[in-house]
Image (cartoon, rainbow, N blue to C red):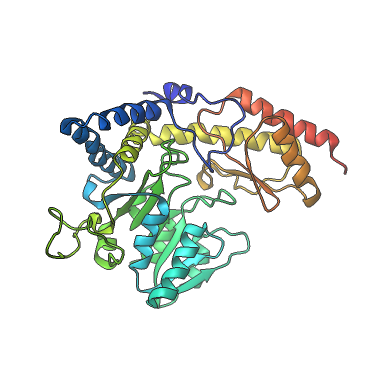
Length: 373
């Protein structure tokens, strides 16, 4: 699959600009899921094992896109949140994170601190919500043991500078929620220690397709507190309770969902074939198109203008009196976006076509013509 074929595989109706909330499943993912469902209905051991092999395949492809060849450091999870909880509950010491982060991080950190008493949460509250190297540097204390951060902020679309954060942190752990950027921005994930993501947004793989990567430093320092019977090496642990696996498998509870793994493997293979760098360049053009129309009709944009500081999210922040009329105009023109707290999050993808962008421009034009200055 090349970039043109990948873009052509977006076969939904025009008007969808909400990829940061949910990614409609790709044709290849739908076909794979349907075929594997039939295989699991056969009752043949060979068919079941064929579907089960997608677990191995998904782990290998995730490792490849993260930038490592060691699939043993990747474990499949029901969601990003599960992976982040495994990482956070196993920490000890000071955990730094933004108070405005997605609840997968803030809730897990708070619950772990309250339940275990081994974590001290160090809240960051930058005025613009962006977790920059300077913000982290100014807040570091001796107690700090880890930083948990979103690769791409779900509110503003700000894309964190992982290499710079690593430089500031030194030997401390860097835990990354990569859901809003995995597969669409070309990032050196190996500067992090834990990377958690999910396939149900930009990867177009559906729910249940989470995964987590634990680097060497994370495997050494994070205790597998939530490890279940599947988090051991060898066969089913009956009549004894062995130690957790030394690999990322320790951070699992039960066996992986084979059908979810099949969907994830299919989606990751599409991205690997096209290349993340090519996808990122095309998506940067689509977000630039969104910004062009916003500027044309004087709708303020919160998201960073520099391509290296954004991914697929463009957040608009109209004046308070304009938020509802703008949201209504977008809906009336058949556009799907996310509206929250007076902001409008627009999230195109590589396959967002000229027809959708035309609808977006028409909606902003209609809004602008009716706006009272």
